[in-house]
Amino acid sequence: MAAYSVIASNWFPSMERGLFNSLILSGIAVGAMISGFSAGALCSSSILGGWPSVYYLYGGLGLVQCVCVQVFLYESPKVHPGITDKEKNYILYYQEADLNKKRPPTPWKDITRSVPVYAMTFAMFGAYWATSHLLSVHPIFLSTMLHFSLEESGFIVSLTFIIQIMISFSTSFASDCLSRKNLVGVDKLRKGINFLGNYNLHSLFQSLTFI
Figure (cartoon, rainbow, N blue to C red):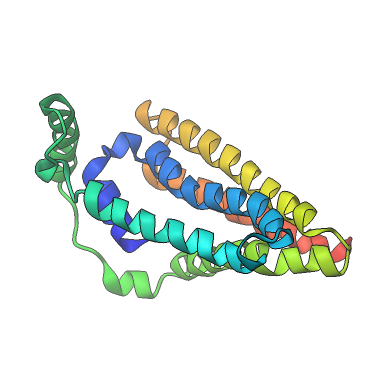
């Protein structure tokens, strides 16, 4: 994730970063959605022994992805051999505009003492924990307690990621529009979207305890 953030800042102009970040990060949800649909069917089949086929398939796809990243991914437009001059100049023009803005030094002491920073850290930890729960524990609950089949459990889990993709693209598109028109500052925009995303996720999980 850390390497992705650096590459994204090198390739995307700041005013378009919201939508393109969502496009890249949605790959996680797309992968979970596809694996949810297919894993149940693979486990129920006789292909490569049933459930081991899931590890063979997605482990192999992971290796293919690593090769593609090594071959096709470049750190910045300056070193990409296949980019056109028009595309490179467009990206670098807006990067230069961002770099020319005077930025104050990073207030590390204030960050370590900031209550909002810790609040955001715990909120993001909860969000990633919820994602891990949906991928690992939730299918077990569906099959053992609610007696869903493997195919049905995979389908239900995949639905959550379909909704995540839809919300991610809609909010990022709205965010870029508001930022491009200078209707809302970037700071308030990022805080507001993070608050809505984490608050809704945590409140919905909390509501499950009352059902």
